[in-house]
Length: 309
Ligand code: NAD
Ligand code: LMR
Image: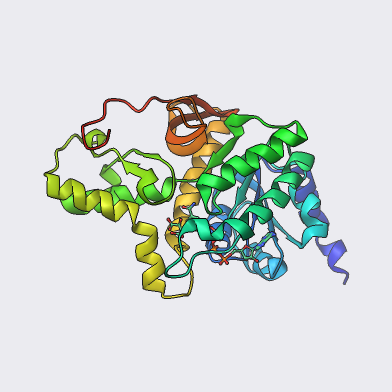
């Protein structure tokens, strides 16, 4: 029997669109992309999941599509299928690009990843200009401004919708602070501001919840560990890439918050690297309130201690 006749009802469901959001992952076959695709397929807010990559997109899609969760999954391979992958999307998550090896800084990735991000953002501007964009590709401090320039040139730039993903810094900060305090990391909330590279990653230890205090030694240890969390993983992987699993977890945490914001939930607050007037810099990571149009409110830094200033 023809597969098409057996799957008639499945096709109706896919076309009719179950309630939920349409999400595309660009770079879905990579170290981050694969676990991210798996976790997004498990997210009940997602009705359609598009997986795009320049390699192995159909293999990953075949694998993920067998999971008995709600989202309909489709795969897209290579530049000719980029527009189909992006058309109609509400949220686009971008983990496409090369990762670091030991001895490299994130800036060493700039030349290759800037070009990749530019091409992908040109596709977004054309096919889903109103989508929220979660940009993971490094160096985030530079890829976000590049994406902004692409959207400006296309006439589709809306600063609230372009969000650099710094959630992994928060996830690490929560984990390391909880370790020092002897708490469950799920009870800890550490704002991390600035950017996503070395000293630009600034955990606000004076604003940790639940309220607590740290000795100068603890502050020094925690700040260094959080700032160098990425390098710690790059060195441990010894040439096999950078953080992928914790990053996929962090990306899903942030994407889920964006989808709850899009749904209209109240009080959705996360840190993200976004166009900002909080400092003299054009882009800065701070806490923002996520809503139907992206980062609807950008919070001030709040009181800083001497060390943080
Ligand atoms: P990876 O090499 O395992 O995967 C990258 C994927 O991107 C590959 O599947 C590759 O085929 C794909 N790709 C390359 N060019 C593409 C294009 N033009 N279009 C679509 N897909 C393309 O790398 P990874 O470990 O998944 O890391 C990806 C990026 O994420 C790196 O730049 C890394 O530095 C960054 N990263 C950021 C954070 C963060 O906190 N923001 C954390 C970890 C990693
Ligand atoms: C991270 O923080 O783990 C990522 O930015 C990857 C890297 O190169 O450190």
